[in-house]
Amino acid sequence: MNQKENKIIKNITIIINVIFCLIFPLSIVALMVSPMVFDAPCSTKDFCTWVFFLAMVSVPIVIFISVRTSLSLLFKLKSYKKAFLFSLLPTINFTIMYLLACLD
Image (cartoon, rainbow, N blue to C red; front, top):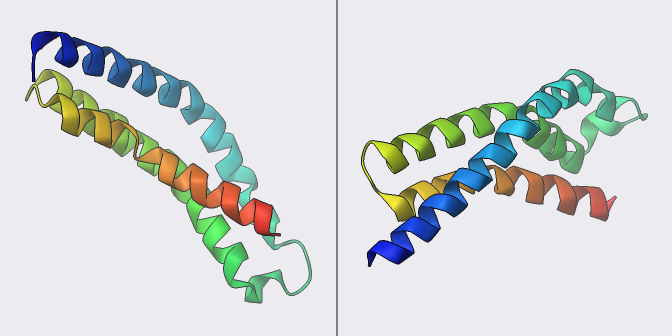
């Protein structure tokens, strides 16, 4: 991989990490209200509700681990592609929550 591609991947990874750092405080607020998904009757027996709840609860943890690991890979180990992939890790949680919200 050449120097120009590395610089582009590095900049994109930094932008993604900044976006997730801005989302982090909001995810903590969402974490506090996440038990509200069980307000409906018989919702504690619904599998999709539990998966949505677990995805919602794990968002702050995944963001923290993702940002910390990707920045470590980016600046200490100079592994740009791995850093980029780790920076996209929280999108899995958001995709699961979006798909489950669309199903209900």
